[in-house]
Amino acid sequence: MDYETYARICITILGIASLQLCASVAFPGFIWSFLVGSLGIASNITSLVQKQSFFFNPYSSLYTFWNAPEIKNLNSFISYSELMSVFWMIIFLIIGYFWYSKKGFKNAFLKNKKQIIISTVLFIVGAGFLYMFQKPKSYKSDIAGISMTGKLETDLKIDSIKIYTTDFHKKIGAAAIKNNTFSWSTKENLPLDEYLIEIGTKKLILVMGSGDWFDLDFKLNNTKLVSYIRSNRKADQAYRQTEDAFGREFGYALEDQTYTNDPAKFYELAQSDWKESQRILNIFADPENNALSDDYKMYRRQLMAIRYLNEINNYRKMTSWNDLKFAPPKEFIAELNENIQKPTQLLSKNENYLQFKLDHLLTDQDQSINADSILFVKLNQLPKSFEKDQLLSKHLSKTMELESDSTARNKLFASEINKINSKDYKNMLYSKLEQINISQKGSVFPDLAFLNDKGKTVNLSKFRGKYVIIDLWATWCAPCKEIRPVFETRNNQYRYYSNIQFISVSLDQDQNKWKNYLKAKPSNIPQFWLNNAEQFMRTYKIQSIPRFLIIDPDGKIFNLNTPFPDEDNFVEILDKLKKY
Image 1: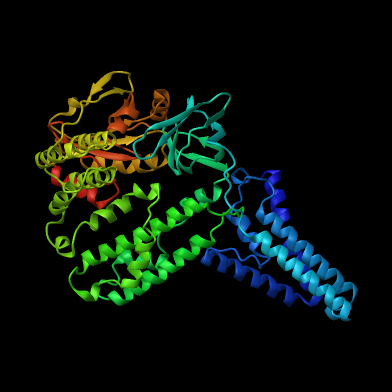
Image 2 (image 1 turned 90 degrees about the vertical axis):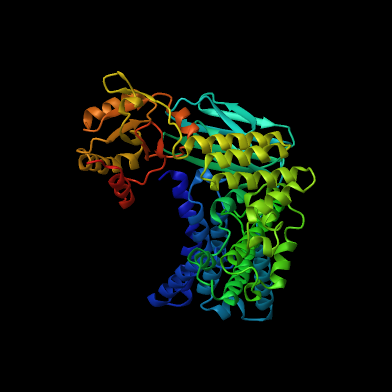
């Protein structure tokens, strides 16, 4: 533990220590201090459940500290939890001192009229100061444009940090890394949005817009990225990372379809959950007591409303569009709709919002028949606009994913693509079609060229005539190494079937690390190393490993995302493939 964290802990417990000392002075005996401490623990548990720090509670400083223990994640060393603790320390030391020296509370504060007036004034001043101090600090736009600085701690060869839009991956800027530090700024008036920060192969999403500054600290290796963020928009980042759209009870009800036969209970729960979600949004402040920015809070309220509306639509799809028993309360729907009358830019391109707009193009009767085909007709009747491009692209993309027949998919694509005017959406859909077509079962898989541990090139086509079970792994991937013994076991289990071949393919950047690992832990399974693995993973959208693939005897995709070897489904698939 570094000295700064230790100092923060010491300061944070001063208020609690002073309270305990004051309690021991006021109420002699061990039991009273114990009861006060127990009450403090109960109050912190309440804070956790309510997701709220109660400013009038001295123990809240511990809850606040627990939410932000890392110095690197704080805008300033002495944070809100320490300041609150110091405040309570002063209060309780003063109370305890006078209580003890005057031999009683009445003698200390209420002995005569003058003392009563002074005590009352001091109480009002202290309460007012506490009330003002606990109010969350509002968001401030400190600069023109955006400023970003930071440090990078890594053994990897990374020469720059890149900033992109999240929707079409358009490059906004880049910061060269020199002596493990980087700096980037722009005077461009960028709208509030979620932007993608790329550090090598790792990614981080930041909410930012013009007027924001960021001081970033990254720790990076092959397996993960750890980031520490200082910013004037800290609360927005914290809310995005920690808050869900729904409360726990309502979330469980949606997942388990608890109230499919009890619409009254479903809508009662939805309404109470909506109120609670709004409460959390309205009172939210990060551990440094920074409030959400008004524009981001508006977006999140709109997004919440959309998600409730979408779940109500899903509920009606599962139950009935026509039976009035399952219709939602009109006042509730009106309240949700009122929140989205003026969608923010962030909301206007959100997937949930676009789905909501699509659903509302259909009548209840449309929903109960061939909704997808009707929706294409209605979309094509809309006047040319960017919103039409958004909605048509969303629906076409979703329909292509659900279509299992490549001929039908290509025909649908050809009939709709030229009705979209936006080049960005067109390019995205062309890329999506290519990705689906190359990844679906029966598509030709590339004849990858591997290196074996002797340095010789071996092509995947060497195993034509067999089902090839491929284990994609790397020496830096701990889950990969944990599952490898099971993969070895399955290899032994199916070794007598001539039409099944197990192979392992390393995606390590450093070939030598792979070779050294094999020297320490040899395998009976053929081991290969794939050069330029990043390009292969990008082509097939492989985001994580371990990953298991099956290529059929003709060199075509059989399964691009096979269950893990320790799952029953893995055995079931191979049992259907084996040839006696």
